[in-house]
Length: 291
Image (tube, rainbow, N blue to C red; front, side):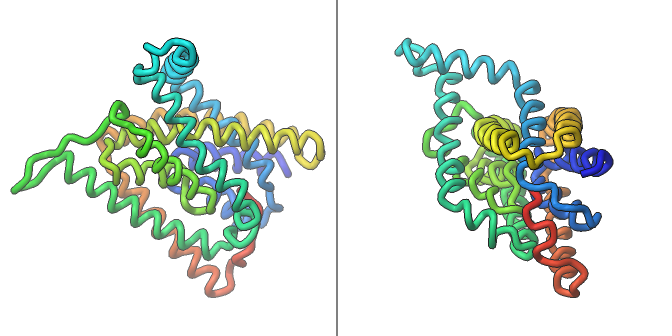
């Protein structure tokens, strides 16, 4: 891998990891369209450590508060009713589905699920779901001619049931094209949460899964010696810097704007991939293990 390739892939990872458009699909498509060699799953998992570091820094106050309260609740019964302590448990509970499905469906995830026709389909289908969820949220927030605005749920309303549903939504992102943030935010909106609450829990929920995956791939890469460490580290730093800027922008964006631009983008990209594969301009297995 060249330094230029690592720069572009790091930029793509940082730009798309937190937006509801699927970073895994974009990394793979970037490599396929550019005619580059497959960067590999290890490259992607390691660069995700960069973007998750951006999450850790951006939400550092929330994370420090949650971790502190959770540890204190282990020995102090009075702390178990604290919202931050409960959030710690809910993040753990919400991480179970992706851990279980990631292990049980490993062969499918690394095989048939990587077909670009499946990626295109999930881009379109999840785009439509996100659009429906966004419209329902907008209707509740603004009301209408014959109905009053409806108050949506905040993270203080998060229950074990909702945490598990969020977790199942996150696990769907094991299929390229779904998008971790897109699936969890859609799930949150459909369950009645505000855009800000859905996005915030989505980012917090991703931390254990992504860091665990990155650490696992980092260990394998260190032992196997099949990673170009210079370009990979460079791409990770680029992904961190760009990812931090994207988080800051995205959290402000969703407080006043809808997700519809991302919906239209997903659907158009999915249609483009289907057309290119159908006419033979793009192989459905191009850069298959990228992302």
